Amino acid sequence: MKVGIYKEVQIDTSHRLLYYKGKCANLHGHRWKVEVWMEGEPDPATQILIDYSMIKQVIEKYDHQIILNEDDPMVPRIREFHPVITTPGDPTSELIASLIRDDLYVACRDHGIKATVKKIRVWESPTSCAELAE
Image (cartoon, rainbow, N blue to C red; front, side):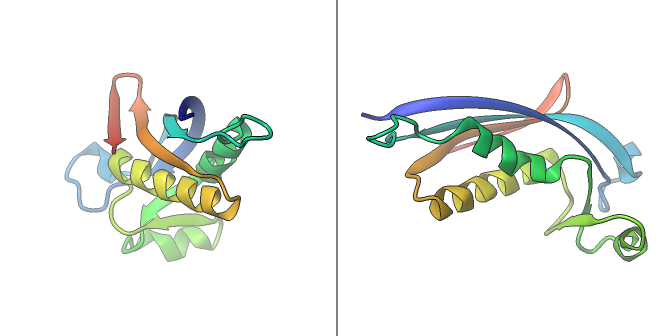
């Protein structure tokens, strides 16, 4: 029996877009809303596909963090004072959706969970989101 689940998590992070011309080129923060849809076969004993708290834990890795392009010249200076999560490119909502999807697959693999990420939405404002779907 295949089942689907949904989880929403909100996080606060700051980022900037190194290669973008506009106000997002400045370091700034967002209250991000992350929505995750997963699908698969639940565990026969528990009937749970994946614990909602595991999804939350994976996403909260980014909470209250500074996320910057690995090529950003600000990274070494900020690291003198605060940890920085670096990304292979500008940390757009599109890229963050992809990173969270990959993190979820690693968590599933590490815990022997057979689930797929059907869709992720990363909202960087109440009116703007990126969606990644299989």
